[in-house]
Image (cartoon, rainbow over all chains, first blue to last red; front, side):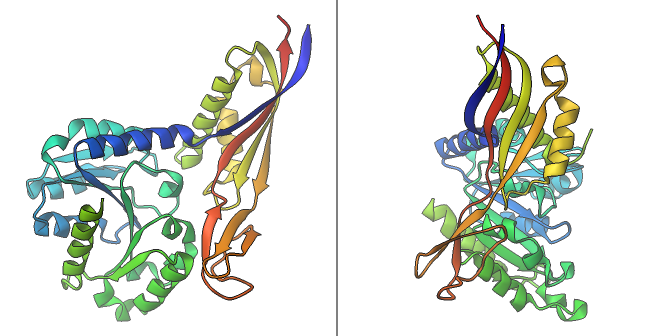
Length: 218
Length: 119
């Protein structure tokens, strides 16, 4: 005999990812490692900001380089002599907690203080996927146009720190970095915003100071 | 291979459905209802499409995927008033202060209507 039954479920569909993310965070914490998810637009300067941090921090750093083809960024970090795991996402558009959990297995976490997870260049897909880092840093640059922040509010809402990069060329692309910062603060009153130029070394010391401050907080 | 995060979500949805049906002797699914927060980064049409690709087999053959939208909720950081909205709110309509995001990015499997065989 068949009968039609209503089954109440009320289950979070993204829970599987969240559970693995919590496990990743726990693994980092058990090893006294602080994780930073560096998300942001393509070509905004995510890799360059990580390079500056790796060079300046008096801490043992490792990098997980996530990209469609990760070897290009991974080579840059390996040149700096830090443990690096390239994560090829293939046709996937974001890192998720599961793929990151495998990268953690390949890093010598016991001898690291900080791990940077460079997410795939994309302001949409990574938004709902916690990977298990302690902070998400969102990086955009003036070359994406100064309406890029207001066009992608959710990722700013779900980040704790925003970097507006390439401010040295703002006037040439007719963008206002200040407007971008104001948009980020309006969308997320809790977010801290930093205007930088990696090329001209503007506010790189403040970028490194933020990282040191956060490592001490966690 | 479909290159979008909706495919990851469709796989998670399938997994969540299968877990919910464990031990229930379900023969056929009639309707799956999911609730999507209005600010979840989900394209519901793509999610339906991806789900239809992976949900194979007799059990899914006559199933309808019912997607309900739920408004996001924001709270004013000054006057604490809560407002629901389909879009992102930056300023409180009562006092003008900044709004804090409370909910609206969820993706919830609400219920399953299924033909169950009595033991």
